Length: 84
Image (cartoon, rainbow, N blue to C red):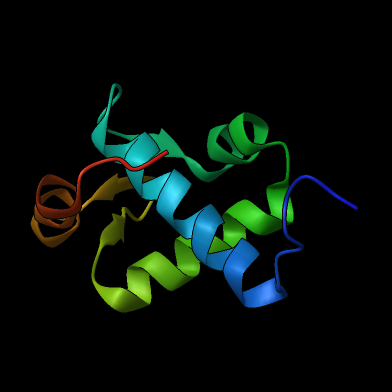
């Protein structure tokens, strides 16, 4: 029997978005999508999650491709806190 429950695709995607938002709000304030992909070890997941965060209004992407948390994204992390 596995120690950890099996995550659905949606749960894994939500966790990736959450991890990237924490990354954007703790440490460096601005990241390239490529650097995010290297950090989470999946370029495709990084691109998909950044797209989702942008649609939700929690991240913004500059015209040259850099990503940062919006005020709403920063506030969400302040309210929820980083839960590991």
